[in-house]
Length: 71
Image (tube, rainbow, N blue to C red; front, side, top):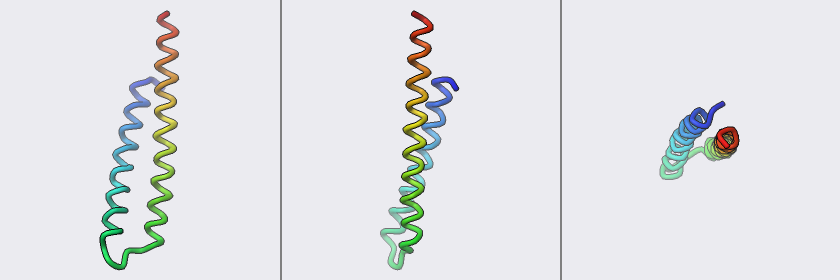
């Protein structure tokens, strides 16, 4: 996977993070919000954050490999 592909994937994941965060915020503002749904959303945020970190690590490695290849 190239640097650009990893960065694009990370951006897509961050868009999903924002959507889940917004849903969690909406849930917390409303009365009678489901604690079970909040827990699900927090778990999803955790998984997405890990995936973003993995993509950024891939992008960094790809960029370093490209730099080494050009040296």
